[in-house]
Image 1 (cartoon, rainbow, N blue to C red):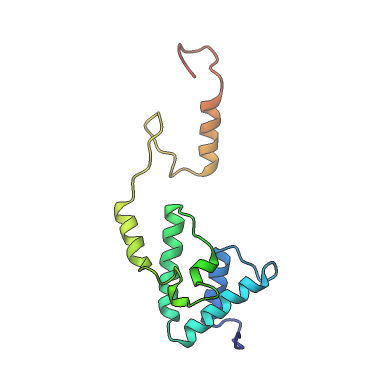
Image 2: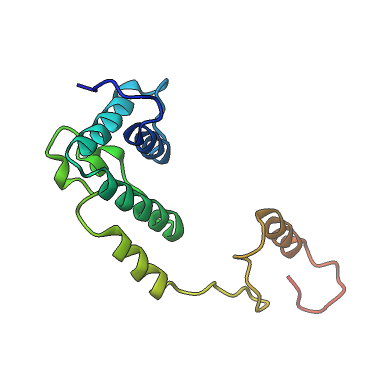
Length: 143
């Protein structure tokens, strides 16, 4: 059962961040939202909220940078079972993140030898539109 907590309690704030990351909203999915909030409050009661915060920060950054599917909130918190076996605690996410950053492959070059990865999406979209235009006859063997 969720214990009454101030709206700005560390457990509630972290719970809101975790819920947002997994696209869980209080209005749209009240039961999953309560599962996440209760999970965070329980970790706070156990004295593990700081560990959970560190783990979540690294997990979120790793999943965002790598583009890897984050999974489901139920797996992250191990809903309905022993929470210590959730993916939040199955590995040291800061180590996973550091290893990823150390071994991260560089940007992939385009056929023209430049990289799109650091350009805004609109510039990339514009470049792709330009490349997909039919050849207007100005050069031999164009696209």
